[in-house]
Image (cartoon, rainbow, N blue to C red; front, side, top):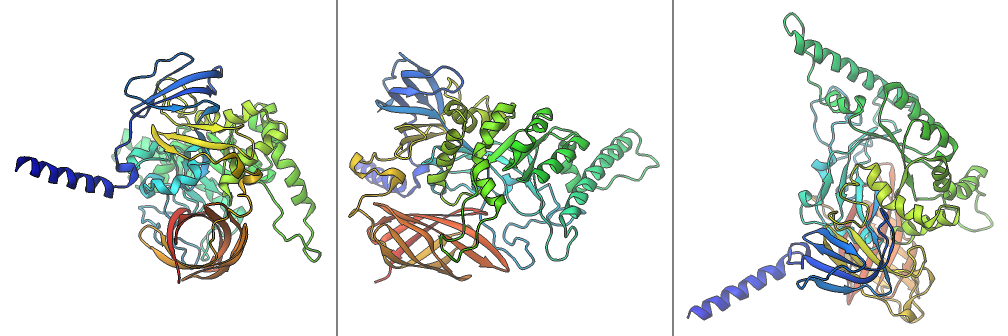
Length: 546
C-alpha cells in the first residue's frame, strides 16, 4: 500500500513538472565545455581549453582545467566560445502597449505625482513594466545576444532603463542592474500639449534641469531651517532628475544626426551631465568632441538601406541617403581611431538574426578589427553599462553568459550551437553542411510548406488579440496579408527556410505606423514564433485552416 502511494505521488510530481515552462523545470546546473577555442576578450585567447559552468557562474576557464564528475560535458571541438553579446538599446521584455488617439499609450500609461505632463515624466521605471517571457528572447539568444539595456520609447523622457539577462522565469531573475540611466528622445508631445516643436522640446528639457537644480537648493535650505519657509513641492519628476543633474545617473540621448548630437553635447556640458549618445549615425563627424567630453556611443546597427523598390518609376534616393549608406558602416572604425568608447545596439532591426552580427561584419569590412568588434559587443558594452565586474568576458567568477559557434562569428554560414544565459543552457541542433547556404537559405526542395490561411493568437500581455495570416508561397519566398482588429496589412520580404518563415509588415493605427518583423517556426499544422515591434517582442501561435 505504501509503495502504491509513493508511485502515485511520483506520477503526480512528474505531471506537475511536465506542465511547468522550460525555464521552471530542472536544468543541470553544472556544465563543462571541452576542447574549444575560447575568446576570453579580457585576456589571451585559449586555443584549446575548458570552461566549467556551475550554479550560473563560470567556475573555471583554462587550457588544462579539470572536468568535474557531476558536469554535463559539451564537446567543443571545432567550436569557438565567446562571451555573450549585448544589445545596448532595446525595449525587450516591455509589453507592447495599445496606441491611443493623440499619440499617448494606453495599457502602459501610469499615473504619477508630477506637475509635468505625460511624456515629460522621467520617473517612469522600466523595472515596473518588465515581464518575464523567456520564449520571447529566442531570436536574440540565437544571435548570440545574452544581455540587453531595455527601456520604453514613449514620450520625450523615455524613463529609467534596466540591464537584463535574456533568461529567467521572473523579473527578479532577469535584472542585472536597475535603474541604469535616464533616456531622452528628441520628439514632441501630441494632442496639442507643449512642446509641439523640437525647439520647444529642447527648451522644456533645459527648463526641467533648471527646475531640478532649484529644487535641490530649496530642499537643502528647508532641511537646514524649515521654520518660516514654505516647504518645497513633492514632485516625482524633479526627484527623478536629481541623480541625473548631479551626475550619479547617466543620461542617454537618442540622437543620430550631427545637429542632434551637438545639441545633446551642449546640454550635457551646460549641466555637467554624465551623457551617452544612442544611435549615432553621424557620430564620426563629432568624434573629437565626444572624446573630449568622454561621451560613449551606443551605435545603431540598423544601417540605412534602400527602401524604395528597384523599379524604373521608383523615386531616386537622395544624396544624403546614399552618403549615409556608405559612411555609417565606417562609423565604428572612426570612433575607435578617435578613442571614443562605443558599443552596439539593434536599433529596431527588422531581421535581427541576419543583420545584428551581419552589420557588425560590415563594420569590420569597413575598417574595424574583428577583435575590437567582439570587444565592443561584449566587454566594451559591459564597461559602458557598469556591469563589467560580472559580465562581458569569459573569466572565473563572472556570470555564465556565453555562446559557442561553429565557423567564424562574422561569416554568413556560422552556426551558433550552444548559448548560456545566467548558466541556463540553450541548444541549437547543428545543420548538416548540405543544408547550409550563404544567408541561411535552405536548398531547393526543403522549404517548409506554409501556403494557405492560418488562425493566429498573438499573446500581448493583458490584451491578447487574434489575427489571420494569408500566405501565398512560391518556393523560398511568399507574399500575402496579415489581418488583425486594426486592419489588413501587406506582407513584405517573406522568406521560407527548412523549418520556418519570416516577414515584415507595417501596421497603421490611430494615425501612426509601426514596422513589425515576424519570425516563425512550422511544426506540422501549427506555427509559433515572435513578433518584434518598436514596443518590444510578443509571441504568437497558430493553426492552419482546412
